[in-house]
Image (cartoon, rainbow, N blue to C red; front, side, top):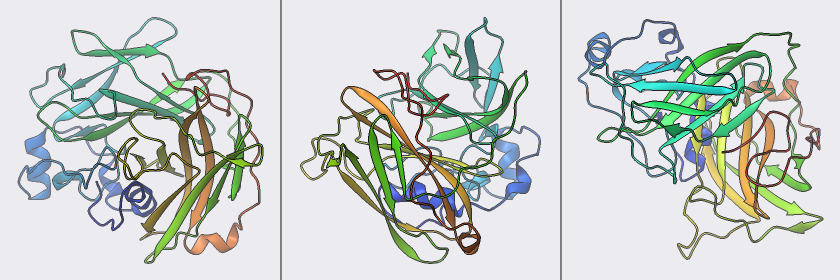
Length: 329
């Protein structure tokens, strides 16, 4: 995880993606094995590091200044899409020895989290593929419609550290790019209202609170989903720098309330526009609330609105979100 972040719990990931503006020139470089990465940076291959149990994708050493998802290859691990039947998405992770990785640790109830988003941030899916014995991960294709997509594999190889690798995938067909929705302090999804309070600013620690209600009443009985009461994916507009994080605490620990509000402390070291996707489970279904947040000097040019555009109602169960193109598996 980006070592410049100073925050706790869930906020760690929020600040990391807000503040990650380092080393982007490395992204276009060639795929390199672990030893070459270390030599390029003049540093030893010391592995990755995470701060607490707040999320995935944090690294040190060769990619210590990069947020998650900007590299297709890191520390010798490489993400490679492979041919698959129509309607299926498949990929492999190869290790430093060049062979497909077949052993993964369970992180937040799953061995692999696959997140995809269109480059214009108009589509988002979070799914969990199945692993074949040969190291191929397979899932019903989450690429819902034509466009340029970014696919993020969020995982921990057994014996290694947490990684998030990213690769671009193109789905042919006509597509009209959609502008990033305006910043908002409230959004609705599947009949729920989620409000966002806080004003992240570079160089200052700020409180950020998300509060969930339904029919005007606070939701105080959120259900565990992947071992937590909520998950956040934050993507930076432009390069889609990524971080997948979880709230501080966990269900059943005697101190973590199941809603309605979750508060974070975030220090935002850089300015920019970001899309936030908050997953929460209630009533037996997973829902995703989306926000655009503008941090720093550009905020004056894009004042927040009161409410963002409501999403399309999602199907019941864990397969849908309130915005077209969203889903969980």
